[in-house]
Length: 237
Image 1 (tube, rainbow, N blue to C red):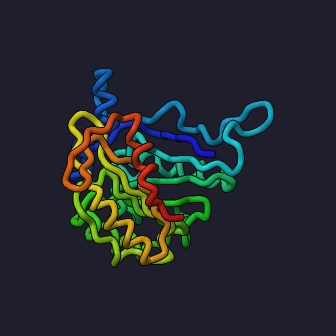
Image 2: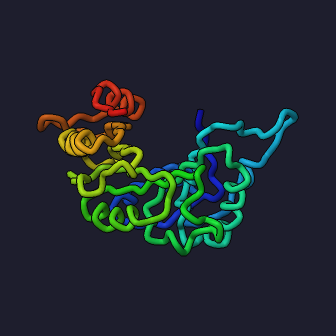
């Protein structure tokens, strides 16, 4: 099973993939400023207990900080405590997604060593420029479990120089929302083929709202985007 843990909320737009960020879009619908970063009341969620033990049961995957970026500089004041919570729950698999991998060393706990075995870090790359900027550095880092996420996929990306058995998975998806930029199925297949050649698992997560296939543009409702991706039948395990 998996669940969400957002120790803080809000972010600062960082690169091209952030233009139509879903956090800003959702906050805007309730007139909340997503650029104001604040610690959440659920900060200690992984440590909370009920009568029969921890509320988050052993073995679950915990998607961490999806309403922000775990390596956001504004959150430096809280991150050490968040790491301590992660350390106290070695029975959980914490999954951290970041665009800010270049802040890795200044954001680590003192006892990181070769990486916490219960932490997966996934770097997002929305285009070739960001892949070439982030992934060579990412591959050099002491992280026990590494993945790559190309979402929103904004252009064709050649991931082949960066794929190896050290990359445990690649996830691709298009952009959602009314202003979504186009995702082309050929771009998805380019990454899928690179993963196949390297023996790396691949998941096509969602088409996005504006999806192009064989030169034809389709408008895909939000509820159908993951279903249509699954129906493509191109995932690799």
